[in-house]
Image: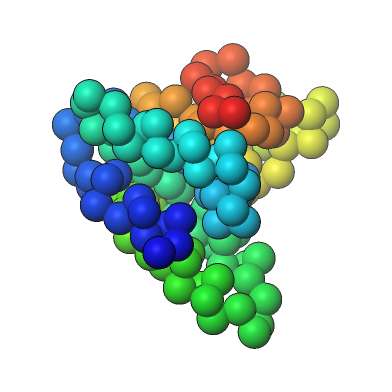
Length: 148
């Protein structure tokens, strides 16, 4: 049984527990089999209040853009893990906020559109952003959480 299969059913979609927006880097670490990432997902899945893990549609694009052409097993793992999360689309409010983040933070911190969209999603949801890449998210209004 793969690590992704171990999580099946533990991350309840639409759960009433706390909501976390998962950044691409954390999902990639888990899919690559990094122990720290797998342990974090297990800990979060076993909390008293089952959390709602969500990701941005931008994360979906980043994950699929990183797959190699021969990696059908990798694609299956991505699809399986994403099926355990709600995928948040980009609405006009998220798009506007992201545009303002790029304007404000590109020159000083190199914030690109993809990271700005993910940050804006976290802000609009009022959810902490679970990431290892704090340098991509200098916005003081974004709650970040480093999982490992």
